[in-house]
Length: 413
Picture: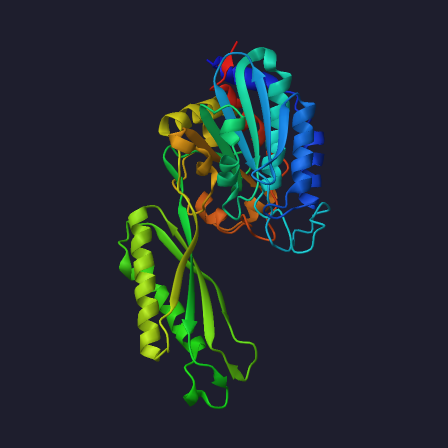
């Protein structure tokens, strides 16, 4: 038997304005904006929230948007969508590809904003069927990791009602229509680390008079690959990526410094601390072996927290999604190594559920090599790829997931 919340969700999303939502998505995709520059996106989202009947405020946490709809007694539910794009040159060839050189919605945040707008409109139009309070949050700067915390610091919960539950979702590769729920740890923490190797510069024809930081950095990059393989137990999940190495200005000049940028992905604080300790030790050791005139500078930079779903909250949302989409659509892929700042909105332990919606176009998915979902997912364009292009069939799917998730907590008539 279908629950009242699922029945109302199906009723409110039965006649979604799919064409209009797709046009909204294409417009956002054509006009991507980087972190804290989401001015146009914020205006477009705020306009739709206002038209739907929400009290709307802009500029929260610099470029964030909040829509508030009070609809009688009942719980307060926060729905969130991140809005920023990435510094990626698009190569999809889509007719609605980015018009901004070097900037692309390569992570699908344009789709997230579309989902939020569609859910807001559907819930507002059907307010006779439920009671409670809705808080719609268009969050800036997820990619840089500061947007959620900036909105909280700017008085999000002082200026607006404190939510009883937070709901969020993200587009991801996979056969169209899947909904991934994990009751517990769903996304990992991430930590950036910068290393500066100090050498002694000089002429490329007289290397004996120098201490070459490029060679030392090369040894260190290789050595760092053993942090996960030789310093951690196989049961401890972690990733270390050297994403950038910079040194020098000319082919015949040995530089004085070399810079290495790393990214760590971890699922526990103790593993992260051990990795940072190993990085410091290896950097010091390689520089000592090379005779560097100064010890290396190792700086621990920006971090994202782990995303850990409240199990009861996530079970409740997943149950609603099974009713609306069918039991076969909902699956548990286990924790991902990706990271999010969504949990910064969950101040003082507010419960939340965060899930994924799969989006790979059917023709592309069917042509992908591999005999299971995991292998195929590794072969299709993923988030942050210049080829990432979610299927438009996911537009109504993501609206329904938010609507049904919200209604599983709101008071339903």
